[in-house]
Image (cartoon, rainbow, N blue to C red; front, side, top):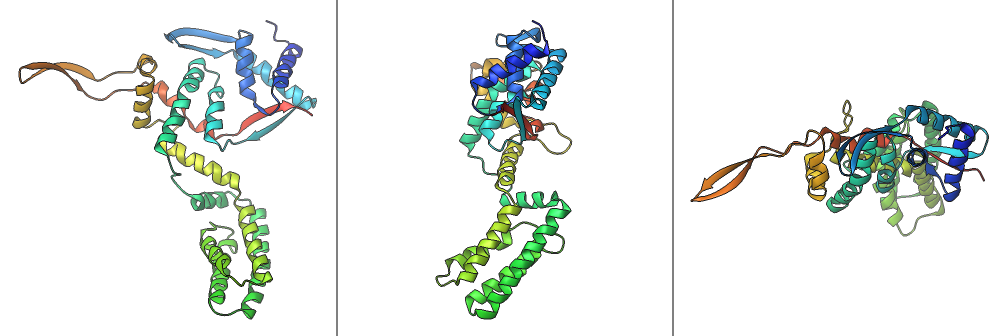
Length: 323
């Protein structure tokens, strides 16, 4: 089939007309590659798994076609990191031009999601650790703006302190000290030190209007500084790190427990993968009875480690028709 830009652009537009929202760009790439027979297939690994890849020429034509459609205002694009694991697993199979990896991810990632849900994984590090990591990457101008906002709040707290006494006085004094540590000097850190104090102040029955407004200012500052999307991404990341080695210098390697879970659910597929080896079995005679004993551990195919890599944390490009 011709790869002319006009034809390809029309096919992209036709695909988007069926969808009324943003679609991951590579989902369209794969769908059109199958439709137009733009995939070079190699050897068959198993009945349902074949090696292959999308032609480089088609990938380039598709890139140019989408770029032209964006420049002409026919479609709009946005880039974002996916902070929902189910959505990430739905789209991640398309973030590769390699057929066998694409197929494996489509088949196995739903089972990995099932494993995560059964294990009820909690984030490996919590909101406060995520905030600390966010603050490290914050631009200097943003840090300066946050510090200026905190000083305004601090002046309000000083007025409150001049008018209150008892337990409220101690809480507001603590609030000022901890807030200064978090939001001043070198820039913002984790908000954890303020959360407990603000919660205690909210419990007080007779707060003045100035106190209620100042608490609201503090919460707004924390929320604008440490956005919910960052927390959600951090939680996703911590779960990925729990099931795959994504440490610095590693592209990703599934842990053995996840591999065994996948092996139990997809025995034929897993055992058909290249370089997969089962433990050796030997006949043994015990108490006059002959039985088979296995020695060693299962050696899983390196291809299995390709289903979940650090690429899942990158930005995904989504496109839709212009309004």
